[in-house]
Length: 203
Image (cartoon, rainbow, N blue to C red):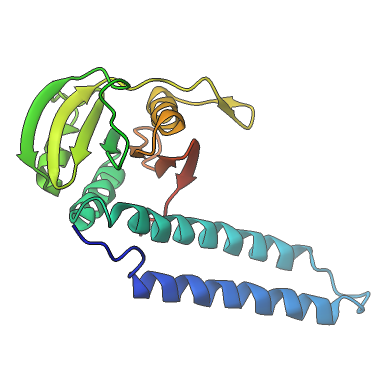
């Protein structure tokens, strides 16, 4: 298994460049603040949008870092969630790391097949009998599909989460597993890790 934890140089460089741009924008705002005829509100709005972009790029970078030691198939996973997102096919993918998940997951249908993006996309294609529930991945293998995960009771802001997102949070609250979620309603992609949900940039 690839043990290079964060060797994703293009993504890291893009992240660094965006952070530099925000720092420069903040410095420019400091320089014009004494000008009473200059309103900074529009600038702040642009900086806020930039921060959101940085947050999503950082989540993408660390997602790859967290995956790399445990599977060589992060490219297949990336292709899969990009395609599912574009078609708005909902999905829930568990990547087992060090913790055993046997006592936490209600096992679905055993598959024991090599992990490919085509296989994952076909599992989550609407109407497939296996598309409900979570796919379990260990190393480079799809272990099982239609698994049931423990649900979290947490809210995000003032909104109750949907079932897939509650499942991603629920398992990540109880283990070191990483759980990818594709929203059927919006196509947005997040991952659950250490009891938190992080939106990721798949562009």
